[in-house]
Length: 474
Ligand code: GLN
Image (cartoon, rainbow, N blue to C red; front, top):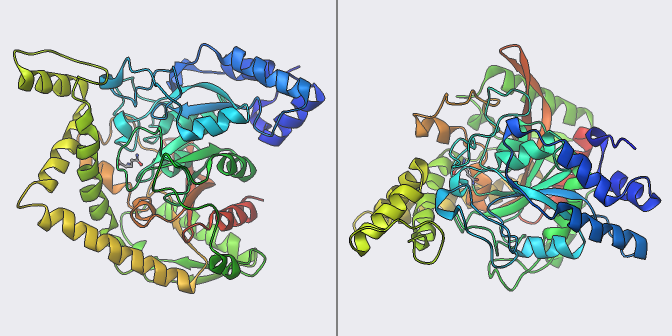
């Protein structure tokens, strides 16, 4: 039978496999056949996909299949799967094979999900376009001339172009939400600590979160429910569930209030993105939501705070790639030369820039001026959000100030690239959950390009994001 990948959801696929309409092997094959190499969404396709799905078929036969059994997934290639190459988009990890499973992978293996391949990303997740990968640029689903977004560009394109049903990405400063918006799908960044980071290649450890990509909110929720939870392998994971106090405060059936930080939406946003944003607000009003203007007086500093603290953490995390324990090694005349050659040739330009910036920020004499000051501001921004969330249930912004840009158009100007993260970084700075959902299209060069609406909720209120997304999209 021909499987309609475009309209398939996890539940539909599950029902069909249960009824015997198609097998997990046939489903995996349908996705494998649909992989378009021109888009360059995958760094590697796994060689045991059919074996994995055969095991899923056995579970359908013996009655132990769960919702995610046999569901083909794409995994960002910075998430460890035992025995598989995990490059993190870098030459330095070109031949590195994971020696253990990330906690999210252990959870997904337990329910029998099928992993199709490792998806392309900006090197070590440093970027917003997947142009910084050592494995070539990933192309946008809607226009081959344009970027996929990043850093989880490969995962977003894999789902949007039906090369996997759902995917995992990682979000340190927008890397799930931004490529989701550029490719017309949904992407969720969870509350910091909600999903274990064990087995995710570290970028900025106080920001990183793994999360799902999907084409509908139900699938986002199914994957999120599977991967979340406390983990002894990651001491920053939160205790399961909300406190009783939080539980009492939340009522999904009440009329919810949406906050709009208008003062933050004045400059640097494309006019048609703003027009689409106004339409989204109108749509939610019509659905019964109350809309209120809010102030986040220090949100304007969140980009600067992020681009100080993140490289500081990057420089510490990436110091382990010294050519001794992991991957690529280039020998010189002495130890110092070994390091210089290994790191100089193994890391790409943007990664080297961040290591150098971070080292500078943490150096004696500058640490107080930059690192400590940014930490203080991080707390102030957190308090701004706490205050705002005492007045409203969620906050809305566009996900990005513009749709996907042309490949190469921002390459020479890192600051231009960083500015595109203006709306996404604050939830990583603060740690609260945020989702990007498709809100329509804008035209560029005769092509329709998708854009996204970002919804932010207080810590641990992922179900509020699910509820509003569902209302908006239905
Ligand atoms: N675009 C941001 C950066 O370059 C975010 C990256 C991410 O979330 N991994 O840092």
